[in-house]
Amino acid sequence: MNATIEKILNEKIVIIVRGVPKDKLSELGEALYRGGIRAMECTYDARGKVSDEETAEGIGLLAKQLEGRMTVGAGTVLSARQVQLTAAAGGKFIISPDTNVEVIAETKKLGLVSIPGAITASEATVAHRAGADFVKLFPISQLGAGYVKALCAPLSHIRFLAVGGVNSDSMLEYMKNGACGVGIGLNAEDKQAIARGDFDFIESKYREMVNKL
Image (tube, rainbow, N blue to C red; front, side):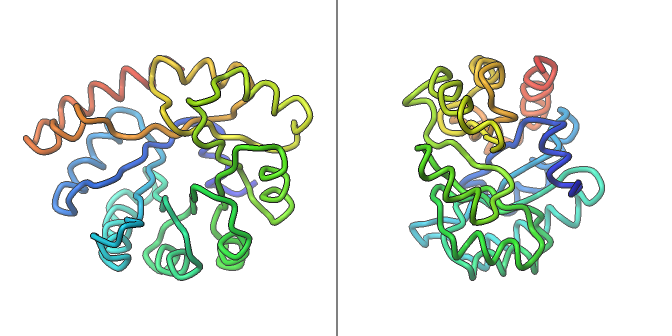
C-alpha cells in the first residue's frame, strides 16, 4: 500500500492549514508534530490573494522540514497546475473541495494521493472511478454522521474522509459511522495563538485531540 494512504488510514486526522503566514509555518508544523499530528494540508487561496507559487513554497518548506515525520499535502486544489506545483514542492497528497477529473488524473499521473471532494453518492462514485484514493465528504457538518453511515452502506468500497465543520468533539462520531478519517481546520482560537507565538497551546490542544482516538 502507498505510504501516504497508509499513514492517513492509521493516523486518521489531517489538519487543514489555511491563511497562516509563511513565517509561522515552521513553528506551527513542529507544534502539530509534537502534539501527535502526522498529516497536514496547506491550502491554496482560491481568491488569489496569496499566489499559488507562494503556497507551494510553504508546502515545500514544511515537506523538507518534516520529512520522515509528517506527511504534507495541498488543499483547495482546483487546477492541474496546482497539482504540478505541489508535486514539485514535495507534497504527497492533493485535496479538493470538488470532483474534478482533470485534477484527479494529474494527481495520479504525478504519483500523489488523490482526495477530491464530493457530497452525493453519484459524485463519490465519479471520483472513485476516476482514480481517487479517498473521497472527502464536504461539507459534512451540514448533513451529520447519519449521512456518512447512509452513504457508506452502498459505497463501502470507497474510503471516505469527513471534512467541513468537524472538530475534536464530533470526529469520533463520523468515524464510528464509516469515515476512515477526518479533516479538521484551524479555528479562530488556534490562529490567535499562532499570531502571538503561543505554540505550546497548539501542541497541547492537538495532543488532547489525538489522545481521543
